[in-house]
Length: 240
Ligand code: F6R
Image 1 (cartoon, rainbow, N blue to C red):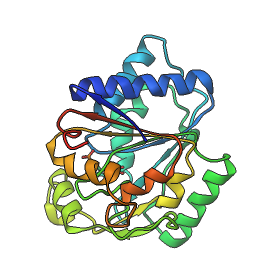
Image 2: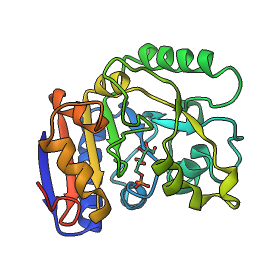
Image 3: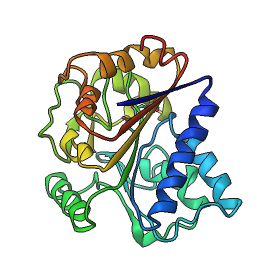
């Protein structure tokens, strides 16, 4: 794992956006996997800036997202479809037909299989942006997840429900399950960049980088990948 420690969340986002730019310049038709949540929001703002400055062209990329809640419509303002539209896709020239998400509605077992097939059909993912949960989850691979996990429906843990329910009008509307790429799916991405900021992430970052590779900290499986860059601010990186 390559570790980049920076002073602030803003710098972290600029570094992540720079790495993204390098990727697209090297391979304009890259297959990109995006994360949602608070961690990448500033990175997406940086990407939009670069697009507006003419430094980035998204017209040839194909996108995938890590996860989506099960059982809420894609138009729901808490869905990850809605998040990606509002924070990135509506502001850049990515082609609508090139945007892919795991589908959390309908027959989720079938949808999960289909998602894996679509990724394979595109020749796999080139570049993945990840956040990390305070319990060490990546995507919605909660503690207990293993390296052989593929896209599937997952139960969210209480800590994830607590962190994410604030986004729902009524906390009881928060789904208890999600459809998520598995650790196995994520590790097949050619390049992975994980970003984290703030003290609340410090323990998870320590366990991911220094701890044993173990389902107790799903992000620790990233130690097994040969091209992972971890970008942290001082607070998130204070134990490494
Ligand atoms: C979201 C995702 C999650 C988040 C993680 C951190 O697509 O995959 O693993 O990256 O829960 O969330 P934030 O960034 O909100 O702290």
